[in-house]
Length: 207
Length: 208
Image (cartoon, rainbow over all chains, first blue to last red; front, side, top):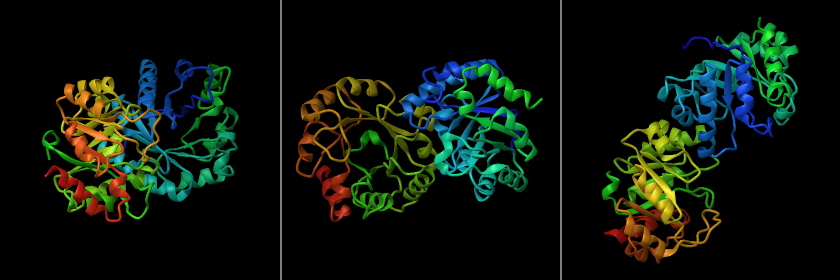
């Protein structure tokens, strides 16, 4: 297994949530404010458009020494020299990423204990579990899982678990108490007027 | 198989306009019938399932040294053990796919006119696929069929393997070959045939 992630708080992108500001601008602000990792997750883009955007985000993240993960596309990750790949639960299998692109760190989204164990077995370096709290962007996936289930996942696996879904700075300590290694956020940051302030608010929770 | 020397049929598997045959069954029927090139195209299939299907095709006894090309996704092609990838104008750039798959892979690109054909041909593409030549119901198109004249124009400028795609049938295939196509890409004419293997054999025989 690879070393544990060198980040505790990371940003998952949504260029729709940060519109009309360009995604690269918001990511740059977050990087300036000290975010340590970014997952580029823009599922509706064509391969060509995703590749172009990924190049831009790679340029920004490299400048700030920030880790970059590409959602679901190891080919794009390879082309732009990302640090890792993030595999959706029903997406590109982590075992195949591990086998063919061993240089990548691998994050895997899971929504159940069963999926968490499977992902660990398939070579995930860390898990992303959620939605832990209520979040409009994930409402379609049903009720929030809650911190009790987060605790269960953390206790039942031996790799780091990040909590996602409705995590605000005020809720970070609850997640850490449940055993989470860190947290990830989409809307909390993408929609924030003051991106820098928001990143700092998250970071202060890990001091 | 060296694509530079191939003159024949290129089956694009489809399970949306028919569901009697799986991608694997269609590929097997085609390879058995003498079609030496198959493209796996399953746009809305989740990656784990697509990967299984691609791997199953590569393991077919009938596949042997024949080619399996994956539509759009170089990562699925690599992890599935396919021979290459086919890229549309909105997919990963050809140079990027080459980086993922390496020098040995067969990489082809779509062109819908002479200008795009030149561009694809000026990269290190292994083939140029021009289309659609005739009306087709397999893919929704927002432009008119290109016809045989465009095919002839492209042929006059491009020396590498040229694939004609779109609306090709047993009836019009001979004139597409006459217009200079090395390879005929077909989908519905084999996938929706009563007997796909027989349809594939009949088409493959045009090159004998």
